[in-house]
Image 1 (cartoon, one colour):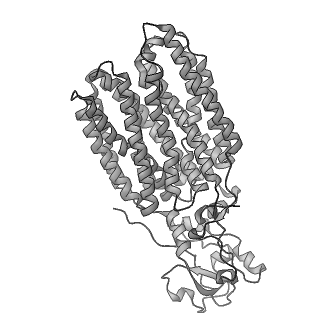
Image 2: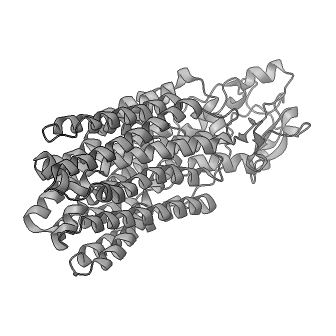
Image 3: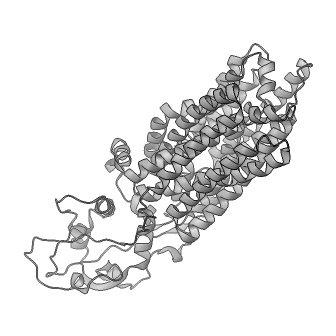
Amino acid sequence: MPRSDLEEGAALAPGHPLAKGYLPVPRGAPDAEASGEPQNGPKALCPALNGVLPQTPRAPEEETQARLLPTDAGADAGTSGGEGAAPARTALSPRRFVVLLIFCSYSLVNAFQWIQYSIISNVFEGFYAVSLLHIDWLSMVYMLAYVPLIFPATWLLDTRGLRLTGLLGSGLNCLGAWVKCGSVQRHLFWVTMLGQCLCSVAQVFILGLPSRIASVWFGPKEVSTACATAVLGNQLGTAVGFLLPPVLVPNTQNNSDLLADNISTMFYGTSGVSTLLFILTAIAFKEKPPYPPSQAQAALQNNPPEEYSYKKSIGNLFKNIPFVLLLISYGIMTGAFYSVSTLLNQMILTYYKDQEVNAGRIGLTLVVAGMLGSILCGLWLDYTKTYKQTTLIVYILSFIGMIIFTFTLDVGYIIIVFITGGILGFFMTGYLPLGFEFAVEITYPESEGTSSGLLNAAAQVFGILFTLVQGKLITDYGPRVGNIFLCFWMFVGTILTALIKSDLRRHNINIGIANAEVKAVPVDSPVDHKPKVLTLSDQSESSI
Protein backbone atom coordinates (compact mmCIF):
# COMPACT_ATOMS: atom_id res chain seq x y z
CA MET A 1 0.00 0.00 0.00
CA PRO A 2 1.66 3.28 -1.02
CA ARG A 3 2.18 5.81 1.74
CA SER A 4 0.13 9.00 1.71
CA ASP A 5 2.01 12.11 0.69
CA LEU A 6 0.66 14.40 3.39
CA GLU A 7 3.18 17.17 2.77
CA GLU A 8 1.94 17.62 -0.78
CA GLY A 9 -1.75 18.19 -0.13
CA ALA A 10 -3.00 14.61 0.01
CA ALA A 11 -6.59 13.56 0.78
CA LEU A 12 -8.44 15.74 3.26
CA ALA A 13 -9.25 14.41 6.70
CA PRO A 14 -12.89 13.49 7.46
CA GLY A 15 -14.90 16.48 8.59
CA HIS A 16 -12.76 18.98 6.74
CA PRO A 17 -14.97 21.97 5.76
CA LEU A 18 -14.18 21.49 2.08
CA ALA A 19 -15.91 18.13 2.21
CA LYS A 20 -19.10 19.80 3.51
CA GLY A 21 -19.84 22.08 0.59
CA TYR A 22 -17.23 24.85 0.71
CA LEU A 23 -14.88 26.14 -1.97
CA PRO A 24 -11.18 26.91 -1.39
CA VAL A 25 -10.29 30.56 -1.96
CA PRO A 26 -6.63 31.54 -2.49
CA ARG A 27 -4.88 33.13 0.46
CA GLY A 28 -5.21 36.88 0.30
CA ALA A 29 -8.32 36.88 -1.90
CA PRO A 30 -10.70 39.82 -1.23
CA ASP A 31 -13.55 39.00 1.10
CA ALA A 32 -15.98 40.48 -1.41
CA GLU A 33 -15.46 37.49 -3.64
CA ALA A 34 -16.45 35.23 -0.76
CA SER A 35 -19.48 37.26 0.25
CA GLY A 36 -23.13 36.50 -0.32
CA GLU A 37 -24.08 39.74 -2.07
CA PRO A 38 -26.90 39.38 -4.65
CA GLN A 39 -25.77 39.50 -8.24
CA ASN A 40 -27.45 40.14 -11.57
CA GLY A 41 -29.61 37.10 -11.72
CA PRO A 42 -29.99 33.45 -10.81
CA LYS A 43 -28.55 32.26 -14.13
CA ALA A 44 -25.15 33.86 -13.61
CA LEU A 45 -23.87 30.71 -12.04
CA CYS A 46 -20.21 30.10 -11.16
CA PRO A 47 -18.54 28.27 -14.09
CA ALA A 48 -16.46 26.22 -11.70
CA LEU A 49 -19.68 24.76 -10.32
CA ASN A 50 -21.89 24.13 -13.35
CA GLY A 51 -19.20 23.40 -15.96
CA VAL A 52 -20.15 26.36 -18.21
CA LEU A 53 -17.23 28.72 -18.86
CA PRO A 54 -17.68 32.39 -19.84
CA GLN A 55 -17.57 32.86 -23.59
CA THR A 56 -15.02 35.69 -23.43
CA PRO A 57 -11.45 35.66 -24.73
CA ARG A 58 -9.00 34.31 -22.18
CA ALA A 59 -5.41 35.11 -21.53
CA PRO A 60 -3.03 32.13 -21.80
CA GLU A 61 -2.97 31.78 -18.00
CA GLU A 62 -6.78 31.74 -17.83
CA GLU A 63 -6.90 29.16 -20.62
CA THR A 64 -4.56 26.92 -18.64
CA GLN A 65 -6.67 27.25 -15.51
CA ALA A 66 -9.93 26.67 -17.36
CA ARG A 67 -8.62 23.43 -18.84
CA LEU A 68 -7.97 22.15 -15.34
CA LEU A 69 -11.39 22.94 -13.87
CA PRO A 70 -13.81 19.99 -13.47
CA THR A 71 -16.68 19.94 -15.93
CA ASP A 72 -19.09 17.94 -13.79
CA ALA A 73 -18.79 19.72 -10.50
CA GLY A 74 -22.22 21.28 -10.81
CA ALA A 75 -23.86 17.93 -11.40
CA ASP A 76 -22.07 16.49 -8.42
CA ALA A 77 -23.17 19.40 -6.28
CA GLY A 78 -26.74 19.05 -7.38
CA THR A 79 -26.97 15.34 -6.78
CA SER A 80 -25.05 15.07 -3.56
CA GLY A 81 -26.81 17.64 -1.51
CA GLY A 82 -24.30 20.39 -2.13
CA GLU A 83 -21.16 18.49 -1.27
CA GLY A 84 -17.99 19.82 -2.95
CA ALA A 85 -15.38 17.50 -4.35
CA ALA A 86 -12.26 17.16 -2.21
CA PRO A 87 -8.80 17.33 -3.80
CA ALA A 88 -7.67 14.02 -5.24
CA ARG A 89 -5.72 11.66 -3.05
CA THR A 90 -1.99 11.72 -3.73
CA ALA A 91 0.57 9.15 -2.69
CA LEU A 92 4.12 8.10 -3.55
CA SER A 93 4.71 4.52 -4.69
CA PRO A 94 7.95 2.71 -3.77
CA ARG A 95 7.93 1.21 -7.28
CA ARG A 96 8.91 4.61 -8.68
CA PHE A 97 12.56 3.89 -7.89
CA VAL A 98 12.44 0.57 -9.77
CA VAL A 99 10.94 2.23 -12.85
CA LEU A 100 13.56 4.96 -12.73
CA LEU A 101 16.44 2.49 -12.33
CA ILE A 102 15.31 0.31 -15.25
CA PHE A 103 14.88 3.33 -17.50
CA CYS A 104 18.30 4.72 -16.57
CA SER A 105 19.89 1.36 -17.32
CA TYR A 106 18.57 0.83 -20.84
CA SER A 107 19.06 4.52 -21.62
CA LEU A 108 22.69 4.02 -20.57
CA VAL A 109 23.17 1.17 -23.04
CA ASN A 110 21.57 3.16 -25.84
CA ALA A 111 23.89 6.13 -25.25
CA PHE A 112 26.89 3.77 -25.08
CA GLN A 113 26.03 2.45 -28.53
CA TRP A 114 25.77 6.00 -29.86
CA ILE A 115 29.34 6.99 -29.02
CA GLN A 116 31.16 3.62 -29.20
CA TYR A 117 32.27 4.21 -32.81
CA SER A 118 33.20 7.89 -32.69
CA ILE A 119 35.58 7.70 -29.75
CA ILE A 120 37.78 5.22 -31.68
CA SER A 121 36.90 6.54 -35.13
CA ASN A 122 40.41 5.92 -36.49
CA VAL A 123 40.19 2.23 -35.51
CA PHE A 124 36.85 1.64 -37.24
CA GLU A 125 37.97 3.71 -40.21
CA GLY A 126 40.83 1.27 -40.75
CA PHE A 127 38.81 -1.86 -39.99
CA TYR A 128 35.96 -1.15 -42.40
CA ALA A 129 38.18 0.73 -44.91
CA VAL A 130 35.80 3.70 -45.08
CA SER A 131 36.24 7.45 -44.62
CA LEU A 132 36.00 9.32 -41.33
CA LEU A 133 32.75 10.86 -42.56
CA HIS A 134 31.24 7.35 -42.76
CA ILE A 135 32.21 6.77 -39.13
CA ASP A 136 30.81 10.16 -38.12
CA TRP A 137 27.49 9.17 -39.68
CA LEU A 138 27.31 6.20 -37.30
CA SER A 139 26.89 8.85 -34.62
CA MET A 140 24.86 11.36 -36.64
CA VAL A 141 22.29 8.73 -37.66
CA TYR A 142 20.99 9.00 -34.08
CA MET A 143 20.30 12.67 -34.71
CA LEU A 144 18.95 12.15 -38.21
CA ALA A 145 16.45 9.44 -37.20
CA TYR A 146 15.08 11.47 -34.32
CA VAL A 147 13.77 14.41 -36.33
CA PRO A 148 11.16 12.64 -38.54
CA LEU A 149 10.23 10.03 -35.91
CA ILE A 150 9.72 12.28 -32.91
CA PHE A 151 6.14 13.18 -33.84
CA PRO A 152 4.81 9.61 -34.14
CA ALA A 153 6.84 8.65 -31.06
CA THR A 154 5.37 11.40 -28.88
CA TRP A 155 1.89 10.66 -30.25
CA LEU A 156 2.39 7.05 -29.19
CA LEU A 157 3.57 8.14 -25.74
CA ASP A 158 0.59 10.45 -25.24
CA THR A 159 -2.06 8.05 -26.56
CA ARG A 160 -0.72 4.58 -25.74
CA GLY A 161 1.21 5.34 -22.59
CA LEU A 162 4.51 5.03 -20.80
CA ARG A 163 4.83 1.24 -20.67
CA LEU A 164 4.49 0.58 -24.41
CA THR A 165 6.94 3.38 -25.20
CA GLY A 166 9.42 1.96 -22.70
CA LEU A 167 9.13 -1.53 -24.19
CA LEU A 168 9.74 -0.20 -27.71
CA GLY A 169 12.81 1.73 -26.62
CA SER A 170 14.34 -1.19 -24.74
CA GLY A 171 13.34 -3.77 -27.38
CA LEU A 172 14.70 -1.91 -30.40
CA ASN A 173 17.88 -1.16 -28.49
CA CYS A 174 18.32 -4.87 -27.85
CA LEU A 175 17.58 -5.79 -31.49
CA GLY A 176 20.07 -3.26 -32.85
CA ALA A 177 22.79 -4.57 -30.55
CA TRP A 178 22.31 -8.14 -31.84
CA VAL A 179 22.34 -7.01 -35.49
CA LYS A 180 25.74 -5.39 -34.94
CA CYS A 181 27.11 -8.71 -33.74
CA GLY A 182 26.84 -9.94 -37.33
CA SER A 183 28.87 -7.05 -38.75
CA VAL A 184 32.37 -8.00 -37.58
CA GLN A 185 33.86 -8.39 -41.04
CA ARG A 186 35.59 -5.76 -43.12
CA HIS A 187 33.01 -5.77 -45.92
CA LEU A 188 29.95 -5.58 -43.64
CA PHE A 189 29.92 -1.90 -42.78
CA TRP A 190 26.33 -1.72 -44.04
CA VAL A 191 25.30 -4.29 -41.40
CA THR A 192 26.79 -2.26 -38.56
CA MET A 193 25.03 0.80 -39.98
CA LEU A 194 21.74 -1.14 -40.01
CA GLY A 195 22.18 -2.09 -36.37
CA GLN A 196 23.03 1.50 -35.50
CA CYS A 197 19.90 2.67 -37.31
CA LEU A 198 17.77 0.38 -35.14
CA CYS A 199 19.44 1.77 -32.02
CA SER A 200 18.79 5.29 -33.28
CA VAL A 201 15.08 4.51 -33.63
CA ALA A 202 15.13 3.14 -30.08
CA GLN A 203 16.57 6.45 -28.93
CA VAL A 204 13.41 8.22 -30.16
CA PHE A 205 11.41 6.24 -27.58
CA ILE A 206 13.97 6.98 -24.83
CA LEU A 207 14.99 10.64 -24.87
CA GLY A 208 11.48 12.01 -24.31
CA LEU A 209 10.75 9.91 -21.21
CA PRO A 210 12.73 11.55 -18.33
CA SER A 211 10.28 14.40 -17.69
CA ARG A 212 7.25 12.09 -18.20
CA ILE A 213 8.56 9.48 -15.75
CA ALA A 214 9.39 12.21 -13.22
CA SER A 215 5.94 13.81 -13.49
CA VAL A 216 3.91 10.58 -13.48
CA TRP A 217 5.80 8.80 -10.67
CA PHE A 218 7.41 11.45 -8.42
CA GLY A 219 6.07 14.12 -6.07
CA PRO A 220 6.56 17.90 -6.37
CA LYS A 221 9.51 17.96 -3.96
CA GLU A 222 11.48 15.35 -5.91
CA VAL A 223 10.33 15.73 -9.51
CA SER A 224 13.31 17.80 -10.70
CA THR A 225 15.80 15.46 -9.03
CA ALA A 226 14.05 12.47 -10.61
CA CYS A 227 14.20 14.08 -14.05
CA ALA A 228 17.90 14.86 -13.57
CA THR A 229 18.52 11.26 -12.51
CA ALA A 230 16.71 9.93 -15.58
CA VAL A 231 18.81 12.15 -17.82
CA LEU A 232 21.88 11.03 -15.87
CA GLY A 233 21.40 7.47 -17.15
CA ASN A 234 21.93 8.66 -20.72
CA GLN A 235 24.92 10.73 -19.67
CA LEU A 236 26.44 7.78 -17.84
CA GLY A 237 26.08 5.71 -21.01
CA THR A 238 28.01 8.36 -22.92
CA ALA A 239 30.69 8.29 -20.21
CA VAL A 240 31.00 4.50 -20.45
CA GLY A 241 31.07 4.87 -24.24
CA PHE A 242 34.06 7.19 -23.91
CA LEU A 243 35.86 4.88 -21.46
CA LEU A 244 35.35 1.26 -22.55
CA PRO A 245 35.79 1.14 -26.37
CA PRO A 246 39.43 2.38 -26.30
CA VAL A 247 40.17 -0.28 -23.66
CA LEU A 248 38.22 -3.13 -25.26
CA VAL A 249 39.26 -2.32 -28.83
CA PRO A 250 42.85 -1.02 -28.84
CA ASN A 251 44.42 0.14 -32.09
CA THR A 252 45.81 -3.15 -33.49
CA GLN A 253 45.51 -2.42 -37.21
CA ASN A 254 48.46 -4.68 -37.95
CA ASN A 255 46.56 -7.69 -36.58
CA SER A 256 43.12 -7.73 -38.20
CA ASP A 257 42.04 -11.01 -36.57
CA LEU A 258 42.75 -9.70 -33.07
CA LEU A 259 40.96 -6.46 -33.91
CA ALA A 260 37.89 -8.37 -35.13
CA ASP A 261 37.86 -10.47 -31.93
CA ASN A 262 38.01 -7.35 -29.78
CA ILE A 263 35.17 -5.69 -31.68
CA SER A 264 33.12 -8.89 -31.43
CA THR A 265 33.66 -8.98 -27.65
CA MET A 266 32.35 -5.44 -27.31
CA PHE A 267 29.30 -6.10 -29.50
CA TYR A 268 28.29 -9.37 -27.79
CA GLY A 269 28.74 -7.90 -24.33
CA THR A 270 26.43 -5.02 -25.25
CA SER A 271 23.85 -7.45 -26.66
CA GLY A 272 23.78 -9.54 -23.48
CA VAL A 273 23.21 -6.54 -21.24
CA SER A 274 20.54 -5.16 -23.59
CA THR A 275 18.65 -8.46 -23.53
CA LEU A 276 18.63 -8.59 -19.72
CA LEU A 277 17.32 -5.03 -19.51
CA PHE A 278 14.56 -5.72 -22.03
CA ILE A 279 13.35 -8.64 -19.88
CA LEU A 280 13.38 -6.45 -16.75
CA THR A 281 11.47 -3.72 -18.61
CA ALA A 282 8.78 -6.20 -19.64
CA ILE A 283 8.42 -7.43 -16.04
CA ALA A 284 8.67 -4.32 -13.88
CA PHE A 285 8.08 -1.21 -16.02
CA LYS A 286 4.52 -0.09 -15.19
CA GLU A 287 2.29 2.57 -16.73
CA LYS A 288 1.60 4.67 -13.62
CA PRO A 289 1.32 4.34 -9.82
CA PRO A 290 -1.97 3.50 -8.06
CA TYR A 291 -2.40 7.13 -6.97
CA PRO A 292 -1.10 10.33 -8.62
CA PRO A 293 1.99 11.73 -6.87
CA SER A 294 0.87 15.39 -6.99
CA GLN A 295 -2.23 17.52 -7.39
CA ALA A 296 -0.93 18.77 -10.76
CA GLN A 297 -0.70 15.20 -12.03
CA ALA A 298 -4.11 14.38 -10.55
CA ALA A 299 -5.66 17.27 -12.49
CA LEU A 300 -4.19 15.93 -15.73
CA GLN A 301 -5.23 12.33 -15.07
CA ASN A 302 -8.80 13.44 -14.41
CA ASN A 303 -9.13 14.92 -17.92
CA PRO A 304 -11.07 12.54 -20.18
CA PRO A 305 -8.71 10.97 -22.78
CA GLU A 306 -11.03 11.89 -25.65
CA GLU A 307 -10.51 15.58 -24.89
CA TYR A 308 -6.79 15.33 -25.67
CA SER A 309 -5.71 16.45 -29.14
CA TYR A 310 -2.09 15.79 -30.11
CA LYS A 311 -2.30 18.22 -33.02
CA LYS A 312 -3.73 20.94 -30.82
CA SER A 313 -1.05 20.29 -28.21
CA ILE A 314 1.69 20.81 -30.81
CA GLY A 315 -0.01 24.00 -31.95
CA ASN A 316 -0.27 25.30 -28.38
CA LEU A 317 3.44 24.71 -27.83
CA PHE A 318 4.48 26.61 -30.94
CA LYS A 319 2.21 29.51 -29.94
CA ASN A 320 3.99 29.66 -26.59
CA ILE A 321 6.77 32.23 -27.21
CA PRO A 322 8.83 31.38 -24.08
CA PHE A 323 8.81 27.72 -25.13
CA VAL A 324 9.92 28.58 -28.68
CA LEU A 325 12.86 30.59 -27.29
CA LEU A 326 13.75 27.69 -25.00
CA LEU A 327 13.41 25.27 -27.93
CA ILE A 328 16.07 27.15 -29.94
CA SER A 329 18.44 27.80 -27.02
CA TYR A 330 18.20 24.18 -25.82
CA GLY A 331 18.86 22.94 -29.35
CA ILE A 332 21.98 25.09 -29.61
CA MET A 333 23.43 23.95 -26.28
CA THR A 334 22.69 20.25 -26.70
CA GLY A 335 23.66 20.28 -30.38
CA ALA A 336 27.03 21.75 -29.39
CA PHE A 337 27.47 18.96 -26.84
CA TYR A 338 26.68 16.32 -29.48
CA SER A 339 29.17 17.87 -31.87
CA VAL A 340 31.96 18.05 -29.28
CA SER A 341 31.31 14.45 -28.23
CA THR A 342 31.33 13.17 -31.82
CA LEU A 343 34.50 15.02 -32.85
CA LEU A 344 36.44 14.82 -29.58
CA ASN A 345 38.70 12.01 -30.80
CA GLN A 346 39.66 13.98 -33.90
CA MET A 347 40.32 17.17 -31.88
CA ILE A 348 42.54 15.41 -29.33
CA LEU A 349 44.54 13.42 -31.91
CA THR A 350 45.26 16.63 -33.85
CA TYR A 351 47.41 17.92 -30.99
CA TYR A 352 48.26 14.72 -29.07
CA LYS A 353 49.32 11.83 -31.30
CA ASP A 354 48.45 8.20 -30.38
CA GLN A 355 46.33 9.31 -27.42
CA GLU A 356 43.13 7.40 -28.20
CA VAL A 357 42.85 6.14 -24.63
CA ASN A 358 43.31 9.62 -23.16
CA ALA A 359 40.77 11.00 -25.63
CA GLY A 360 38.27 8.54 -24.19
CA ARG A 361 39.24 9.51 -20.65
CA ILE A 362 38.77 13.20 -21.44
CA GLY A 363 35.32 12.38 -22.77
CA LEU A 364 34.66 10.41 -19.60
CA THR A 365 35.75 13.39 -17.49
CA LEU A 366 33.48 15.70 -19.47
CA VAL A 367 30.41 13.50 -18.95
CA VAL A 368 31.05 12.48 -15.33
CA ALA A 369 31.44 16.16 -14.39
CA GLY A 370 28.19 16.80 -16.25
CA MET A 371 26.44 14.04 -14.30
CA LEU A 372 27.43 15.76 -11.07
CA GLY A 373 26.18 19.04 -12.50
CA SER A 374 22.86 17.43 -13.47
CA ILE A 375 22.21 16.06 -9.98
CA LEU A 376 23.18 19.32 -8.27
CA CYS A 377 20.99 21.34 -10.62
CA GLY A 378 18.06 18.96 -10.03
CA LEU A 379 18.44 19.24 -6.25
CA TRP A 380 18.72 23.02 -6.51
CA LEU A 381 15.53 23.27 -8.59
CA ASP A 382 13.59 21.09 -6.16
CA TYR A 383 14.74 23.34 -3.32
CA THR A 384 14.36 26.79 -4.91
CA LYS A 385 12.14 26.42 -8.03
CA THR A 386 14.27 29.18 -9.64
CA TYR A 387 14.10 27.69 -13.14
CA LYS A 388 14.79 30.84 -15.16
CA GLN A 389 17.69 32.09 -13.06
CA THR A 390 19.37 28.68 -12.82
CA THR A 391 18.99 27.95 -16.54
CA LEU A 392 20.47 31.32 -17.52
CA ILE A 393 23.41 31.09 -15.11
CA VAL A 394 24.31 27.57 -16.26
CA TYR A 395 24.07 28.67 -19.91
CA ILE A 396 26.46 31.59 -19.32
CA LEU A 397 28.93 29.37 -17.47
CA SER A 398 28.76 26.78 -20.29
CA PHE A 399 29.62 29.52 -22.78
CA ILE A 400 32.60 30.60 -20.66
CA GLY A 401 33.68 26.96 -20.29
CA MET A 402 33.59 26.49 -24.08
CA ILE A 403 35.83 29.54 -24.56
CA ILE A 404 38.35 28.22 -22.02
CA PHE A 405 38.32 24.76 -23.62
CA THR A 406 38.85 26.25 -27.08
CA PHE A 407 41.93 28.30 -26.22
CA THR A 408 43.64 25.74 -23.97
CA LEU A 409 43.25 22.69 -26.23
CA ASP A 410 46.64 23.18 -27.90
CA VAL A 411 48.79 24.19 -24.92
CA GLY A 412 50.72 20.91 -25.10
CA TYR A 413 49.77 19.63 -21.63
CA ILE A 414 47.01 17.07 -21.83
CA ILE A 415 46.25 17.41 -18.10
CA ILE A 416 45.01 20.95 -18.87
CA VAL A 417 42.56 19.48 -21.38
CA PHE A 418 41.26 17.11 -18.69
CA ILE A 419 40.59 20.08 -16.38
CA THR A 420 38.98 22.34 -18.98
CA GLY A 421 36.96 19.42 -20.37
CA GLY A 422 35.64 18.73 -16.88
CA ILE A 423 34.62 22.38 -16.40
CA LEU A 424 32.89 22.41 -19.78
CA GLY A 425 31.07 19.15 -19.09
CA PHE A 426 29.91 20.18 -15.62
CA PHE A 427 27.87 23.07 -17.01
CA MET A 428 27.09 21.95 -20.57
CA THR A 429 25.84 18.47 -19.63
CA GLY A 430 24.35 19.74 -16.38
CA TYR A 431 22.11 22.00 -18.46
CA LEU A 432 20.21 19.10 -20.09
CA PRO A 433 17.72 18.31 -17.27
CA LEU A 434 17.25 22.03 -16.63
CA GLY A 435 15.85 22.46 -20.13
CA PHE A 436 13.46 19.52 -19.70
CA GLU A 437 12.04 20.72 -16.38
CA PHE A 438 11.84 24.38 -17.42
CA ALA A 439 9.89 23.34 -20.52
CA VAL A 440 7.40 21.30 -18.47
CA GLU A 441 6.84 24.26 -16.13
CA ILE A 442 6.16 26.89 -18.82
CA THR A 443 3.99 24.58 -20.97
CA TYR A 444 1.85 22.84 -18.30
CA PRO A 445 -0.67 21.23 -18.77
CA GLU A 446 0.64 20.17 -22.19
CA SER A 447 2.16 16.70 -22.34
CA GLU A 448 5.67 16.37 -20.94
CA GLY A 449 6.49 13.87 -23.67
CA THR A 450 5.55 16.34 -26.39
CA SER A 451 7.52 19.27 -25.00
CA SER A 452 10.63 17.21 -24.24
CA GLY A 453 10.33 15.46 -27.60
CA LEU A 454 10.40 18.81 -29.41
CA LEU A 455 13.40 19.90 -27.35
CA ASN A 456 15.26 16.75 -28.35
CA ALA A 457 14.26 17.19 -32.00
CA ALA A 458 15.78 20.69 -31.97
CA ALA A 459 18.91 19.24 -30.35
CA GLN A 460 19.25 16.62 -33.10
CA VAL A 461 18.84 19.20 -35.88
CA PHE A 462 21.46 21.49 -34.39
CA GLY A 463 23.64 18.47 -33.60
CA ILE A 464 23.73 17.34 -37.24
CA LEU A 465 24.42 20.85 -38.54
CA PHE A 466 27.07 21.59 -35.93
CA THR A 467 28.82 18.24 -36.41
CA LEU A 468 28.98 18.61 -40.20
CA VAL A 469 30.15 22.23 -40.12
CA GLN A 470 32.57 21.82 -37.21
CA GLY A 471 33.97 18.62 -38.74
CA LYS A 472 34.64 20.46 -41.99
CA LEU A 473 36.25 23.38 -40.15
CA ILE A 474 38.47 21.02 -38.14
CA THR A 475 39.61 19.25 -41.31
CA ASP A 476 40.33 22.47 -43.18
CA TYR A 477 41.42 24.94 -40.50
CA GLY A 478 41.96 23.01 -37.25
CA PRO A 479 40.02 22.42 -34.00
CA ARG A 480 40.27 26.03 -32.76
CA VAL A 481 38.25 27.46 -35.64
CA GLY A 482 35.65 24.72 -35.25
CA ASN A 483 35.29 25.43 -31.53
CA ILE A 484 35.03 29.20 -32.10
CA PHE A 485 32.10 28.41 -34.40
CA LEU A 486 30.36 26.69 -31.46
CA CYS A 487 31.23 29.56 -29.10
CA PHE A 488 29.41 32.01 -31.36
CA TRP A 489 26.24 29.95 -31.38
CA MET A 490 26.35 29.40 -27.62
CA PHE A 491 26.52 33.18 -27.20
CA VAL A 492 23.35 33.46 -29.30
CA GLY A 493 21.72 30.81 -27.12
CA THR A 494 22.61 32.78 -23.99
CA ILE A 495 20.81 35.86 -25.32
CA LEU A 496 17.72 33.82 -26.22
CA THR A 497 17.64 32.27 -22.74
CA ALA A 498 17.74 35.72 -21.15
CA LEU A 499 14.63 36.68 -23.18
CA ILE A 500 12.49 33.79 -21.88
CA LYS A 501 9.58 34.91 -19.73
CA SER A 502 9.16 32.59 -16.78
CA ASP A 503 5.64 31.36 -15.95
CA LEU A 504 5.83 28.34 -13.62
CA ARG A 505 2.37 26.90 -14.26
CA ARG A 506 2.85 23.41 -12.80
CA HIS A 507 4.53 24.78 -9.68
CA ASN A 508 1.71 27.31 -9.21
CA ILE A 509 -0.94 24.57 -9.34
CA ASN A 510 0.82 22.58 -6.61
CA ILE A 511 1.50 25.63 -4.45
CA GLY A 512 -2.00 26.99 -4.98
CA ILE A 513 -3.61 23.85 -3.58
CA ALA A 514 -1.17 23.63 -0.72
CA ASN A 515 -1.71 27.28 0.28
CA ALA A 516 -5.49 27.54 -0.28
CA GLU A 517 -7.52 28.64 2.72
CA VAL A 518 -11.11 27.52 3.19
CA LYS A 519 -13.68 30.30 3.51
CA ALA A 520 -17.42 29.95 4.11
CA VAL A 521 -18.65 30.00 0.51
CA PRO A 522 -21.32 27.27 0.30
CA VAL A 523 -21.34 25.43 -3.02
CA ASP A 524 -25.13 25.53 -3.17
CA SER A 525 -25.48 29.13 -2.00
CA PRO A 526 -28.69 30.60 -3.52
CA VAL A 527 -27.32 34.16 -3.47
CA ASP A 528 -23.73 33.80 -4.68
CA HIS A 529 -24.38 34.06 -8.41
CA LYS A 530 -21.43 36.19 -9.46
CA PRO A 531 -19.70 34.46 -12.39
CA LYS A 532 -16.13 33.75 -11.50
CA VAL A 533 -13.42 31.25 -12.27
CA LEU A 534 -11.62 29.71 -9.32
CA THR A 535 -7.89 30.33 -9.56
CA LEU A 536 -5.58 28.45 -7.27
CA SER A 537 -2.63 30.80 -7.18
CA ASP A 538 -1.44 33.98 -8.75
CA GLN A 539 2.15 33.33 -7.80
CA SER A 540 4.55 33.48 -10.68
CA GLU A 541 8.28 33.71 -10.80
CA SER A 542 9.19 37.05 -12.32
CA SER A 543 11.50 37.00 -15.30
CA ILE A 544 14.98 38.42 -15.07
